[in-house]
Length: 472
Image (tube, rainbow, N blue to C red; front, side, top):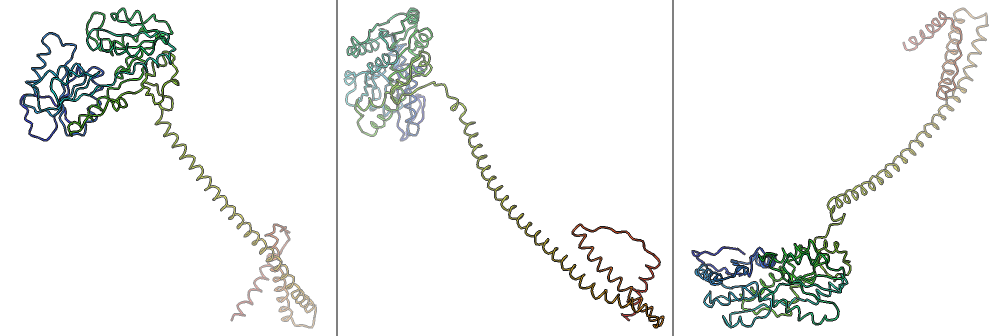
C-alpha cells in the first residue's frame, strides 16, 4: 500500500488499484484515527494507492460543502479511482451528492444506521456497510452490575441530525429497561456539566453518548469532553466507543475503530474482486469487544472479576513479575545453570572420591605387601645369620685351639691368627646385618666400646693384603 496526495499532474498508467477514503471529521480525531489504523494494516501488503480526504463536518457551514465538492472534482480529474469509501454517514451524504464525480468508481458507504436514500443518488454501483446499532442494553447492564447503579445519567448533545438520531436510538433501546433503573438526561453546557457530575450520588453511573461543544460553544472532540468530565466526576463513566479508551471512561461493550477499519478494508477487496459484501449479522460479530480501563476500575473500586470473559483490560499496572520479566528469566536461567553445574560437580567429586578410595586401598595393600616382604627379609636375615654363625664359631674355636699349640711354627701361628681375625671380621659383618634389621624396625641401640686404632688398621691391612694375592 502507498498513501499519496493527489495532484492535478498525476498520470496513472499502471495496474495499481486507486482508493479514496473520505472521512467525516479530521483524521486526528480518535475514531477516525483508529478507523484508518485498522484500514491501513489490512492494506499494508496490497498493491494499491490510497488517497485520504476529510470533510471535517465541524466546519461544514455556508458554502463549505460546495467548495469541498469542487475541490474533489478538480483534484481528482486526472486520477481514475477504482473505489470510493466513506467512513461514516456525514461523508456518505456529501459524497453521494457528487453525481458526476468519478462515475466509473465503485462506492462503499459506511453508515451509523441504514440510509436508503443514498441509493437514489448513484444507483447500482453503491454498496453500503451499515454498522450495527450500539448495544446500549449491554452497556447499561455493565453499569448496573459493576456499580449497582440505581440511576443512570446519560450525557448527550442534540445539535445535529446525527446526535438526535443517536439519542433516539438509545431511548428506543432503553425501553426494555424501564423500571429497572432510573434514567436522567444531561444536555448541559460543559461548565455546568462538570459541576453536576462532581456531586452525583454513589449509587449511580454515567453513560457518555456524545459531546462536541465546550462551555463557550466551540468545537471539541468527545475524547476531550470525557477527559474534562473525568477529572471531576464522582461516579464511573461508561461508553460504547473504543476510541474513547484512555480518556477517562471505565469501558463497556465497545465498537472498535480498528476492527471496523479492517472489516471495511476486507469488504473493499471483495468489491474490487466482483464479490458481494457480508451481511449485518456477520458484521456484528466482528466489530464489538468488551474493553475496560484498569485505572478507572481501581479508581472506583470496581471488581474486575465481574467483567465478561475475554474482556480486554488496558492501562493495567504491570505486576512485579511482568515489570521485571527479563531479569527474572535471566536469573532463573542462571540458577538452573548453576544447579546443573552443582549436580555435575557433585557427581565429579563423588567419582573422584571413589577413585581416591580405590587408590588408597591399593596403597594400603601395597604397604601391607611391603611390610610383609620386609618382615620376611628380616626373618630371612635372622635365620641366615644364625646359620652362618654356627660354622663360623666352629672355625673360630679351632683357630683358638691351634693358637694354643706350641709345637706350631711362628709362620703357621701367624696364618692361624689371620684366619681368626678374618672369622672375627665375618662375625662382625653378620652382626651388622642383624643391626640393619633392627634399624628398619627402629630397635637398634648403640653400644659404644673402646678400640685400639693401630691394631684396627693393622688387622685391616693384613686382611686386605690377602685379597690381591688371591686374585693374582
